[in-house]
Image 1 (cartoon, rainbow, N blue to C red):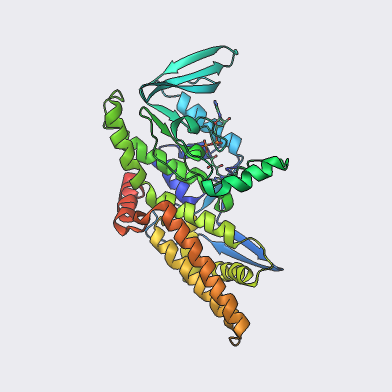
Image 2: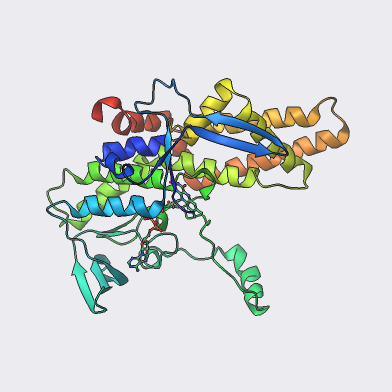
Amino acid sequence: MMGELMQPGGRLLLSKLGLQDCLEGIDAQVSTGLAIYKDGNEAVASYPVEDKNFPYEPSARTFHNGRFVQRLRQKASSLPNVRLEEGTVKSLIEEKGVIKGVTYKNSAGEETTALAPLTVVCDGCYSNLRRSVNHNIVPPKLRKIFLKGIDEGENIKAMPTKRVEATLSEKKGVIVLGDAFNMRHPAIASGMMVLLSDILILRDLLQPLRNFGDANKVSEVIKSFYVIRKPMSAMVNTLGNAFSQALIASSDEAKEAMRQGCYDYLSSGGFRTSSMMALLGGMNPRPISLIYHLCAITLSSIGQLLSPFPSPLRAWHSLRLFGLSMQMLVLHLKVEGIQMLSSANAAAYRKNYMAATAL
Ligand SMILES: Cc1cc2nc3c(=O)[nH]c(=O)nc-3n(C[C@H](O)[C@H](O)[C@H](O)COP(=O)(O)OP(=O)(O)OC[C@H]3O[C@@H](n4cnc5c(N)ncnc54)[C@H](O)[C@@H]3O)c2cc1C
């Protein structure tokens, strides 16, 4: 299973791109929320149905990813200025720091080239091409233990649930998109939504350019993309990574209290459930609102941990829980940048990409 749930926010973005019919005829099922199970208890958390700020039907769709992707390909190839060609890209062609195109093996097995003023790299979570554009390395802190692992003959595997931070391409004439560009833990099933949001923003930024021949101009435009995308991308990245850490079962009492706190918060109904589901569904891309709810979950977990009366051990676990939670939040703030909290950015995102009038 990979990329099989399209959040309500993702459906809205799909419709903004004129691609909503790609969800039809693929046996997609309607999903109105989450069922949550923990220790024999179960609860339902629904997407808010009366969110006046969300101008689209508040439900998700689940489907077979392959069928959806084929529909997207059919739709793209039906455009008069698109020629679809299947092949495996071997490398990017670079001249004086500018990407000029790709060399690839076509379906007949012949190696050939394709040149373009702007190359879009979107080769997924196992991206090889990303490396030619950015020089991300193993953090120095991890090198020693990594080399020790190799020396001891460990079979080191890369899993697709990795985290890739969005970094500005160092080369001109190229843009990296999708999982090759930015990835978070898939716990909240929102990778496609972020990708659609990125495509919508880029479409609007690139549309006024008459052509992509001026690599400097295109680079300038692409730089602004990194800021505009923050409300949706930082919210999803933070929520996905925070949930993946908080929801793992643990014998550590502080961590377990956090996990129980998440369950209680999500299943409590009312404002807390609907707000969290609006965030999860991409219906309210406001990172600051997410930070508020993550703090509220932390405080209510601490309250639970201290009840019915605060013993020294419970107070100790509460302190640790607070520390763990703050550590997690500070890490995310560092990675995403403090501008993720900008209310003006979030308001501009909503106005430009989620308003009903532009549908
Ligand atoms: C376990 C898991 C579950 C997930 N569930 C969800 C979910 O329910 N909902 C959601 O929104 N997101 C989900 N995601 C995230 C989502 O799958 C990704 O964000 C999304 O698929 C990214 O799309 P992409 O096009 O960047 O990459 P991919 O979907 O990986 O597509 C990359 C494509 O590039 C091709 N390719 C690679 N190298 C080359 C090359 N050299 N030449 C030519 N082609 C090449 C690959 O064959 C592939 O077709 C999940 C992720 C994981 C890991």
